[in-house]
Length: 205
Image (cartoon, rainbow, N blue to C red; front, top):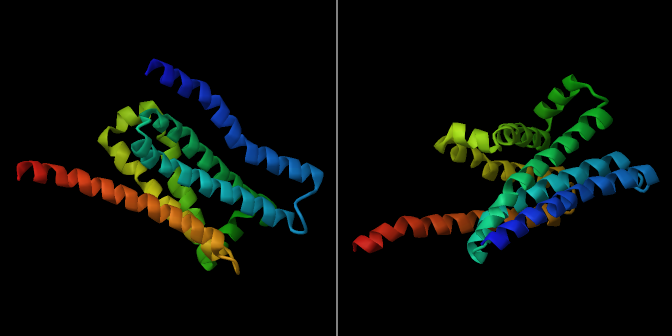
């Protein structure tokens, strides 16, 4: 167990570096001018994709831990969740600063007019309290309320999928794939909770 814990600690810098690779790739493509005919759209889409992927990866850690019995995998959850918030913030910043020219009033208008921006911005807002309360100190302060708050991540991930689906005009295969991943992760949780709820009943019978 000690050896496994040490391996988890040693692996964290590697996971951190891997999470930074998409950002490094984006910066490289910007400097090399290889983002194609619509570089702003590429920056927005790729940063948003990684925010959603990391968010789903965060949700996948609990089922993966249950399936493999490697309970220490949960120690990566905070890092992946914060990186998901980071890429979501990069995604929003690119849209606000580069696409809209930094006009907050225009952003508010877009939120009202376009449903995909409404759900995307809502998802980002809901991520803020999760990021702010991700520390061990906040876990202790909030107690049992911490888990209730962080269950918002399920709804946030769904909002992210809807944001992507409504944004895409033609090929919906990738957002539908993310939706299937989200549904699979939710069904796994429902199944485990149903089993846990049924155990006392079977024992009593």
